[in-house]
Amino acid sequence: MRQLHATNLVAENKVHVIVNGDTESIDEFVDHIKNNDIKIKTSSTPHNVSGLVDYDGPDIDWNRYETRFMTGQMTKGFRLANEILDKIEKSLTNITDKS
Figure (cartoon, rainbow, N blue to C red):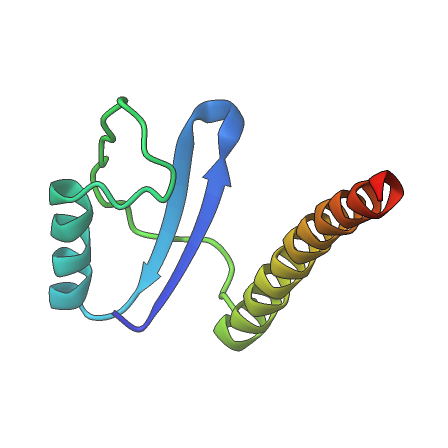
């Protein structure tokens, strides 16, 4: 498998995945997803994998997608770090105020 694009469709409780690669690697990927719970957030709800459908949308600029994806992930990480640092700062301020 060469490239993967996943979109979390929260309202539909689905993840839409576009995979680019040779038939064998795509089949291995689908088998892995079917046989393993790969969700980051675990739940008691099992996941179901639908059948494969050929993609007939516009060509995907994979380089642009990967760049945007990495930028988005970094942004999420920085936001989380800022939230945690704010909590630490508030805790330290409370400790200092009590002294």
